[in-house]
Length: 145
Length: 256
Length: 106
Image (spheres, rainbow over the protein chains, first blue to last red):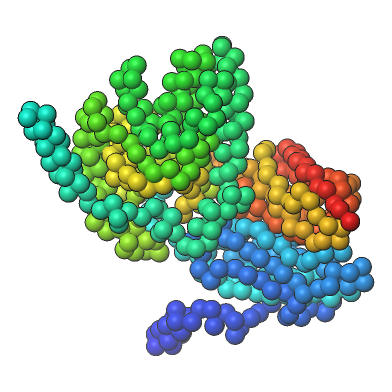
């Protein structure tokens, strides 16, 4: 890579990390593996994360799936993936029509700025996902207390 | 006449002391004012605030008989009587004349009243009891006294607060009096108040005492950390309480 | 392992209620070192489930990607008066459980 190209790409990445990630939007290979050939589409799932996290040790996360949650049509499970954590599959939640509402709130650890993906498996066997970028900042001071 | 003159001297001393305040009472801001909205919301959520796990444990311990006397804290103290107590610490113990923080007071009660071993700093039980006691003063303004025997400790604490130390050669005042509100990398420097401790710190991923927070600051400026419960920390805690006079207790705070 | 559960004390039959649990657990990642430099063994709550009058209504596989002192919130339909019982287990085989009663009317 020529220096000028490198600088251009570096500046671009600095200026628009969120937009760049959103444009590329590659599906995590682990998500593909989870779907295992079944239909996998973007939509139905809403993933809410702060754009900027003060500390990666505890980041609030909300996953909502648009589903009537009836015996005929409901969410069977929700799977959370991190792009940069040493353990990419952060959690799996198993639901039934008895949930009444397909929404989970929790707090996760994120090892640095990255894209988080939530996948929902529906009762008809289809998979739906949403992804969100997040910037995780580091502390200014060392803490060896 | 003499009494009047004394009153005038006391008043002048009060004014002088007020002028020594680097941060005027009207400008005081709790550490929670420097947090992002997420952590502030977590602190204010009585259920999700993880520090409440320690407060609940503290309540159980408070009622549990312990020691040779098989006595619970609640056996001597009526619950309602603890309201506002934490806001007056550190405080001089009348019997020994020593300055005690809340941890020291709990341990003195254990050794002298109920015949139990003192609890170790940062042990789950001491954090729980301290958090439970401080929680009883939720919203109460900090009101530690620096009169009488406390005065010398206050002066020592003030000297400690202004002492340059460590490889970075910084005093507490360099950051928390002179630079609060400014950015240090991604963080905003706070005024360094003790009103939310013991607090749940994301960095620690657990609850910690005010002294652990002081040690974290010392480690940050690459200075020597003193042992837990050392006199210098106690004096500094009294000075911090005076600096924060009027700020409401927020325990258990949630911090970065 | 202490825990706190939050559900409404009372609900109408068929109402969708919010269920929260907060468990005291370090969710040790296995990547941290102690004061003398030894690696601290991974120990996380790996499974958490909730039974409503004996029937499982929620289950989760958790990992080191979930924050220390895990917080989980979900929903369930109030069907009958009784108990919501949570059970969980960590990598060291420690188990915990906590229950909370609910009164369902209508």
